[in-house]
Length: 284
Image (cartoon, rainbow, N blue to C red; front, side):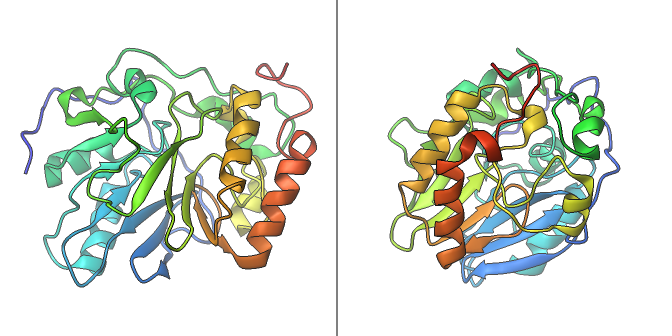
């Protein structure tokens, strides 16, 4: 149990975003100890053996989704169970949407990369979304997306510098900037399991139709919120070099086996044409 700092707040632009997909509410056991739940258009993961109460939550969903996340957690691990911690891949609104309610309900610590902490302690706003990138309706809607900093106070801590992940002894965090400065992915070497966050995704996230239908295709990080494309390219190369056997991403369905390896190779080789928008304020 942790001492909860009640001096927490969402940004002034925090609000419910009415975007969804056919996978919303769908929970899938990808591996015996890795469960993926889709919250509207984003994924969270519960990592741990469901026969125990030793588990963590990866990311915190969309605004107003705390009840759904708590329900999914209790369905998997039992009534009144709580994770040992919440690990954030990054701090964008769709990955921290229910974080304050979850902290208050569970009283657990939260961890993120140190470069992400200014956006999670009320100091800095993320760069504004870029609705001008070519793509579909989600990109155009992105101007509505919250980007003001939330303040988690003393509830948020920096991930250990040695690459270990608290309460996830078999995983290491991998710094995968580009989408945000402190974005991390999580990797378990023994079975090559990758929790990629938004370093790359398996749906073309700027297209409303593809998001709604969850049409599977590998893509770079969501274009409308990615500000450093050089770093994003290097992060994809870094993750591809790990040769993951299965990848669970922040958006889209999980991908594994030959489809994953071939798709990642294609993304590395054709990153400029697949991932980077032709125009936009964050494109050099």
